[in-house]
Length: 260
Image (cartoon, rainbow, N blue to C red):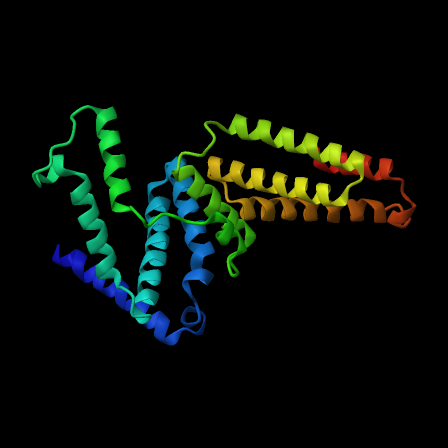
């Protein structure tokens, strides 16, 4: 235990030094760090499914850094410190597990009833704390649109308003695409914009459900497109003709050969 305390103390000291002396770390806020916290959490989940224990240890460390960093910012703002974070979760876990810590309250002994007991305890703890306006959240400045969408969908899911399978979300995506086609047929620009927004939101939900980072997936797709388009330009250059002289059918033919 003494060794653990020493390592934890050293790590907290490292975060404090970074906040004091590193220009990038010094200017960070809860909002600016939100995307990194989200990314690290997703990477932990992905590593769990990969079964790589060494990588999991590293990713858990990255996630821990984000938690300590946020606690340090809160401490500087006079709000709370990492000790308060640990004390809060310790108290919560003891309160929710009377059957383990024997605090005088006896929960049911079967799994289903225990789950209901757990949810009731959580509801009492959060009474008056989780009345969140998602409309207000959508209007907030600061986070990226992806972060806002992820927060709102996660919040709705915690309230039980969620999909039961990725197939359901894909069916919804098909529905939204059909509605987009209808809007295009009507030539109503406002409707088209609205349907495209709906499609983007469904795609965010699909990524959330499948534990895929939307931005990283898009980044990977952009990189793949860029590499293929560069090859397309090189193939066209070999002919000695400008790309503008090629029909779209011929360019598509070359594109498909590059993909293959």
